[in-house]
Image (tube, rainbow, N blue to C red; front, side, top):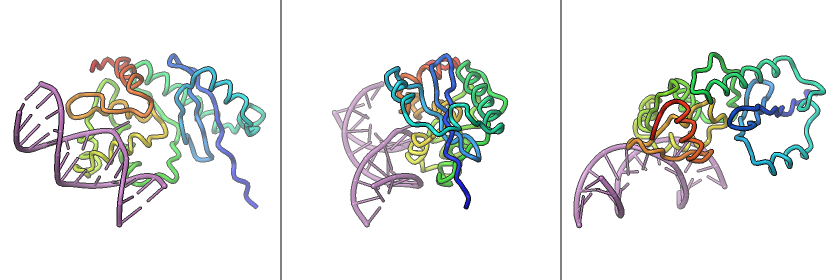
Length: 176
DNA sequence: GACAGATGAAGGA
DNA sequence: TCCTTCATCTGTC
């Protein structure tokens, strides 16, 4: 019988707070925004699987985590990261993956509109669906959905909150 | 199948 | 300009 490894959660300390990265057997599954102190305490109290807190951590996950940490710090400093760990998009739709791949191509300091992303994935009229895919993005910051603005150069929306989106853009030298 | 959504474009005041 | 309305497409339930 094959045992399934549970996702491993690891904290990532950054200037913007402590993110939580989740890894599966195949790569980075999710990146959670820093929570407030109360929620952090609750999260510490949660039952974790033993792999999480250092008893046993596969080498590959440790190296993915180093890449995640480095990439996150680069993005928060407004610079391009060199390498990302493999992303585990199992269970996500083809459309979402193509949108997220298009987002990964946006350079730091640059922005695109939802319409431009829709055109980039070959669905020029699917602008609203692009917004939906952005909101379903499990790896915010690294998959830069914050670099997508509405056509009128307004912020549009953001799953992590418009304030975070504005601050991320400001770090990259973009003023709204 | 109905509904919602992080849009875009067009038209009117 | 600003606001409203409508068309469009995809994901979720």
